[in-house]
Amino acid sequence: MHIAFNGWFWDQPHVGSGQYIRRLLEQLRRIAPDLEMTLILPPHHTNPTDLPENVQVLAASGPRGRLGKIWFEQRTFPKLVKRSGADIAHVPYWGPPLSSPAKLVTSILDVAPLIIPDYSSTLWNRIYTALVTSAANGSAHTITISEAAKADIQTYLGLLADDISVTYLGVDPAYHPQLGAENDAAIREKYNLPDRFVLYLGGFDVRKQVNLLMLAFTYVIEAHGSDVPLVLAGKEPNWGTSVFPDLRAYQQELALDEDLIQWVGYIDEADKPALYRLADVFVSPSMYEGFGLPVLEAMASGTPTVANEIDVYTETLGDGAFLTDTARSMAGAIIALLIQEPLRETMINQGLAQATRYNWRKTAEATLEVYTKVMQT
Image (tube, rainbow, N blue to C red):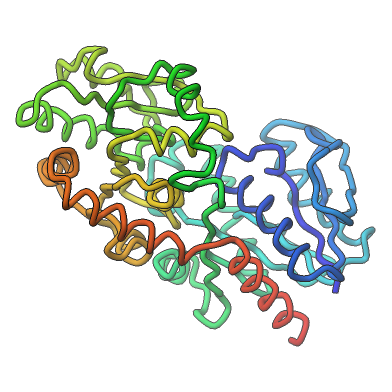
């Protein structure tokens, strides 16, 4: 069996789609050493040095930018799939071609552009969303990453349940309470982190609802004081659009000074496990996720977590995290984890136990089952 992969996100391990394809190929090679794999790379990234063993590479040429992405997905990728002789073409994100010379498997991690109008507010985004929505119906099989995401795909794309398989994501072994902890002090110094802090790590687009966390933190300060600041980690966008509301301005509106909310910027991938370990509490206020891997990474690192009560978190986090539904209840959960040591230890242990349920080997095994099923139809 020969699988050709769309490698558009291979050079972006800091985003979900990039991490997904890297871990998937790595684990597929371990569990299926005879599986033939070809990675088809876009024009902006043609010389990878970090591939698993025995993965062939076909590098594309052509335009770049937004139009280049569509050209690669719709024209170049199918052409190179045909050249490779692959049995299956796997697009590991929501960007399938309208037609494929091989049986097509598409991974749709979420359908945020259909659920949250802000993501399709521009003409370009509306055109692209319409294109990939139409193309999704041409896949031999669709993979997604949670039952909640599967339900959304059925509702918004009209795909049949039998044509969708759920393959949960995995937590990398680097996220561990002790593994690598000898470097934590250096990471604290690198990012100028306080002795104690509450952490948010991720993007700042509207669905992440960081504004909800900032509001919740005003209640934390009111009840608990200002000795444990909020650290916001992640690359800041260009503020002031419908997708990226101006959180800096919102901070001023809430009268939260720089000692209470600290922005530390982009975090190197290798430093993320330490950042989770150093935090007293990790919070994910997101209104919508396909899976929500950062919460499980924090739990696997031994950090108690608080998350917004959405369907996917109810499904994947179990009793391993505090789920809250308002800014005030989020604040209450944060305060409880800061001051109640028995509760804190209980949540740490439950979080560690829950996180062990998810690993990339299971993801690869479930994905291989999908390939086998597609080959038999």
